[in-house]
Length: 226
Image (cartoon, rainbow, N blue to C red; front, top):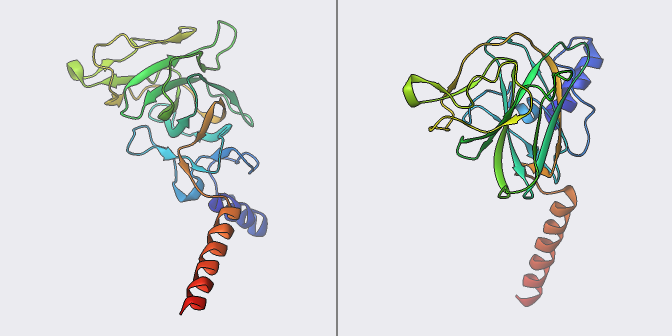
């Protein structure tokens, strides 16, 4: 979170915007795209933002700036057998998003284009059956869809353009290889999560204090014995 705090201080100090998207209010459980200096989230497991923080992860905020080639992938931890993620728009965004969930190996699990015929936001809602561990959540513009390596690039979920409701893969090869690089919208977004935590957990400041106190006590004990 240090990067976000410094960026905000610079913004107020010199009046120059230093972020591509206005961040969500910094706080517990929130990840802003590019936190900790990771930059723009990519759309492969190798270029994803690895969410880093303490405890539960409830909110991801970011900005899709490229309608035809952009998608943002985040590595998260799912903490239970159930999980949900739902998108909402921020600022004056016109983004029409789709959501995708992949396992830690990049194997596709779920996708949704539109929640309903009257709601073009997206959600992933898994009631049971997940194994707690590392996963990747992806938000992409409407029409940009993941492809596998099979057949030179097969749509993993088929063509989900114009569909509603959650879908599972239809291709025999479900490992993410690339994307269709198509889309028709961009903008700022928020993803609200349940049963999720940061992919990389960092100790709370109090934990450092306890470790330091323990080391000092051990050093004092050794001095008394010598």
